Image 1 (cartoon, rainbow over the protein chains, first blue to last red):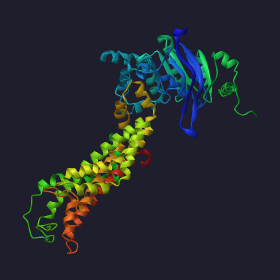
Image 2 (tube, each protein chain N blue to C red; image 1 turned 180 degrees about the vertical axis):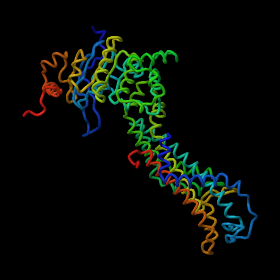
Image 3 (cartoon, rainbow over the protein chains, first blue to last red; image 1 turned 180 degrees about the horizontal axis):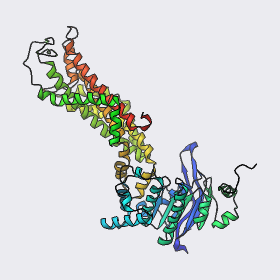
Image 4 (spheres, chains in turn yellow, red; image 1 turned 90 degrees about the vertical axis):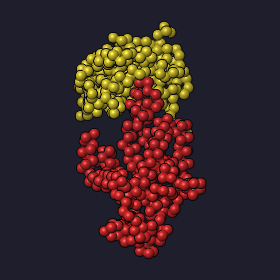
Length: 260
Length: 278
């Protein structure tokens, strides 16, 4: 049991700013994430879920408490990124506008310890593009500003398909794209889990989406995890008032907007 | 790129600015070699068919002097501009990107240089320089005293870029700090840095003229700059004797170059910054 724990957090805290402006972004949070599961972190804006994702990614380190990846603290971030990768929220802001998409997808291999050969990199980029249903010829010589938001988000996922990390931190990958693309992206996430056995941390503000994809859901509010459990339990028997609020906010086709 | 150029050409300020600037550059670069020296005349001869802009105190033709002065002034301006922009951009990029203690230290240095009035430093160093001051020395001095402003503005821009997602992505792609700074931050600032460079060239030319005017500019054979011409005229009391051709042409040339550079800078801002685009 102990061996397949990917992330283990014990009472971690993270603050920003100094003095009176000091804000607590993550307050005394503890959790375990095991190998191969999809965990969703759900919460409203500013609840600290993105900060938590960045801690898992190793971009931030917690100020107190212990945070372990596979039983060890994150010391060398390069080693960490070999195995833990991420998809960010804003597909337009994620790529450097001055280089072609293909160059940037190839650049991603720079993090791998055993760097594949040039032909191998080309082959893996092509495969990754096909995995997200994009013909490699379609993006040949294209620059980020020439693609749509949905395509860009797929490029970010292609990066993951190319690198094949062990863990994926998906920080609101669906919040900036339209509904069809959203369904697509969830499909790709499932594909990553099923085909590559990836552990996925899915950060979202939409508890409905989380319900569909996750094995477990953490509900965050005000820098704390207020509820954690299986999606059925969390949605059917919410214990925390914040969960109830999140559930009420799911748009419903049958519900009238204003009660007459 | 082509669209950018099209936008630029539509801007009358850019067209006028670049026309004036290119003309002065061509005159400065080719003038001295094309305009073969006219035989010396008497001191302070008034403009005539033989000497279009008259002669100076030694009877040298003013057109030839102005062309050489223009060349030297441009040299000093560009050299100072390159030095100031390079130092300022590097300091600003590192401070803005690294943040924390590196930022604090670099910022302290920048502020230290800002509070020291650069013109006073220029005067003191020039005045105490043991032997002949070359054009290059003056250019280097100007460059080393004017970089803090560039550093400040570049730092502000780099700080705002640091938190962007594409920087985070570059990081988890395994890019080193240097790669991030030069590949992922600098290109975004390139247009801005170019504009800063133009302003630094303009201020370099002005600073050189100012310091030469008070007699602390370059001395020695072949280092006649526009400022030196003004200084000579002043020393000979050209104005008092009514030798207007000793002062005005040089002053006008300085004004035209700096004006052209300001126009260029202004028009580019209108194109690079979409919010100012008409």
